[in-house]
Image: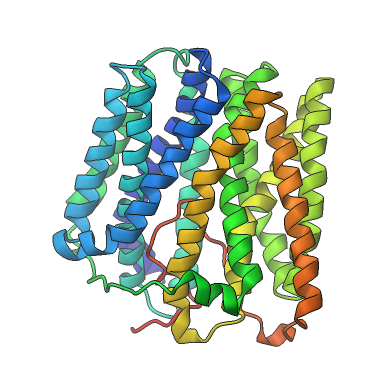
Length: 411
């Protein structure tokens, strides 16, 4: 295992640098648009476009890898993303930001498909779980660290876009210089949405909802925070708290979901998260920043775990050979939710107040909790020993599902 991890170090380094750039750009775009006085609904619309590109990339990335190979496809897409980001240093036009978000989503989906399929092809059925754990840790560490580049200069300084573009370019170096040719990627048919819904209504709906609330929270949190004077270094720590919660809570939630009825765990999670959402607004209005950070970390952690829980719930109702094709359908549902989330939530923020970010998320979570109860009455619980294992999924969604240790693997 140690030798395997060492052989994958160039790939992990490239992944880390790429996520540093993503972590910076994810905060920089909404903050820059907010400083320009752009309305929250327009900001939300631009941020939603990332998931349009992500959806397109998830559908076509495997074919691009087959055509160009892992390294060339990774290099081409990351270079294109860097060019789009650098263009934003010359123009702060909403149209330029919108085009950049679409292309960035597409490029990220393709780049992560290349990396994840590479990791899958380099590991065995015995090592995939550990490789996935290291990979997720690298992704979250990069997202966490990238936000602190915001403090190099003021958010209005265009040089921050140059720094983000430089990080994307830097991500090319380790993987391009690697001598590993990369494995062959197989094209997988995506199971129909109707088929997955018939097999696991809760799993598919939960996946869609997780895309809505995840995209809304992590894209619009910088806009909400500026309402309460959380800027510069404080903003980096606040966003970092949300990402830290997403990392830490996967362990207790994963433990509980593997030992109790997964639907009961999901119901409890949703209720706790909705209460945490209300607490965030309460603490923010009272000026209690530390409790606000903690409440945000709790709800962000639960929201980040909703997606992998929806996958586990769906896999509980499928045969092993169906999991890969169903995964493509779940990614599609998550991406559709990602398109809906930021824009629909930002409309409420524009019409009322930025506090609506957490109110909307809380309402959606409580509605999902009601649906969980309905499904609990419609179908009896699966025996605990027959449940699929909880596996944490990264916050960057791609089409490479073969890295999931629950799916069939050919060594």
